[in-house]
Length: 231
Ligand code: CA
Image 1 (tube, rainbow, N blue to C red):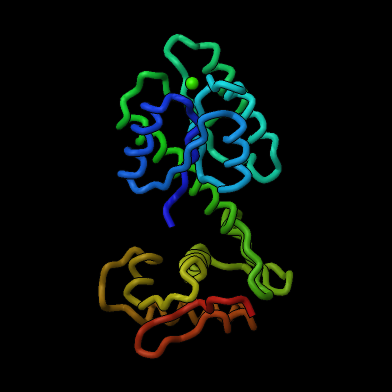
Image 2 (cartoon, rainbow, N blue to C red):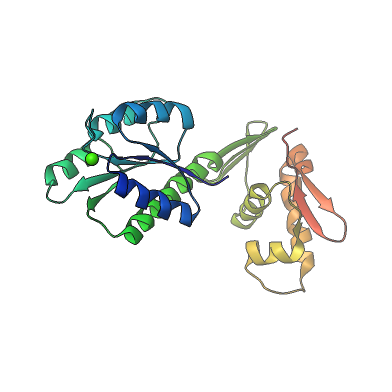
C-alpha cells in the first residue's frame, strides 16, 4: 500500500492543493485542520510523514512536533514544517523541535512534492539499515556493517568475496539467484562462462558456515537460494 501523509493545516485552499498533488504522486493523505484532530489522527492512522503548519487555531505546530519527538513509538516519524515567509524564528524553533525539513509559504508545489519524496526516501533507507545491519538467522549471526559472521557464536573468517556472496544470497532470501545473476552482482562479471566460479565459492562458503551452510540450497540447473524462513 502507498505511503500515508498526514497534512496538519487549517487553510483549506492550501490543503486542497497539497492533497491533490500528493495523491497525484501516488501517496494517500489524511487531513487534520487543528492541533487536537492532528493528535487524534496520529494515534489512529500511523502516518509515514507529517506535513505540519506552525500556525494552527488551537495549538502551536511546534508543540505537536515536540510531542512526536518525545513519543516512544513516533519519535522517528518524519516531519515537514510549513511556515510563513519571514518567520525566521519559526524555522529555527522548528529544527530545534526536531523537524526534518521546512518549506516557506507561499511555495512551489513541485518543490514541496520533491521535498516529501526526499524525506521518505531517507527514512526508508534508515529503516532498511536498521533491519539488515545485524541479523540473527537460525544459528547464523551476521553484522553486515562490521563484516562479522558467527555460527553458533563462533566467529567465521570469510574472504570479502565470500562475505559479498553471503550478503547477496541472504538479502534476497527466498528468491533463487541464477549463476549469471551472482556473477554479475557479486563478481561484477557480465558473462555466461565461468559458472564453475560460482559453484566453487558457494561450496567454500557452505563449508565455512558448517551446518548453517544448509541454509543455502542448490536449485538444480539454475543456481542457489538462501532459505526464506529461519529454521
Ligand atoms: Ca495556519
